[in-house]
Length: 102
Image 1 (cartoon, rainbow, N blue to C red):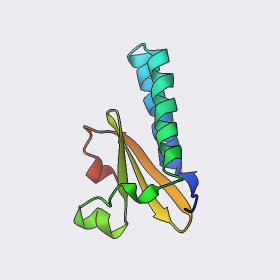
Image 2 (tube, one colour):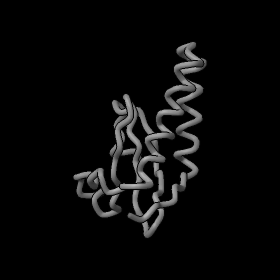
Image 3 (cartoon, rainbow, N blue to C red):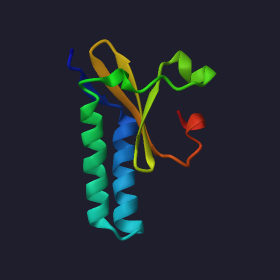
Image 4 (cartoon, rainbow, N blue to C red):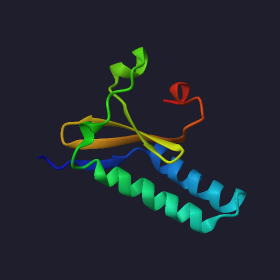
């Protein structure tokens, strides 16, 4: 089984920072913030071995760019596979109107 490389988009890096800061400062839960970020990164790293485990999002516009989603707690990790690379496109809170933000 091929092992894939993980690449984070600029937006996904900013998403991670925003998630951590929101939980740490707004919710006053620094330990929870750190644990969540570690869990998200761990789940992303697990994609290296089987990135096709999650199907392409079934939306006419998104299907064309072949974005998949992985759910971790209340967050959705959006990614696509290109050759031997997994590009993490965005990481968003699940209740946001994410279709319009992709």
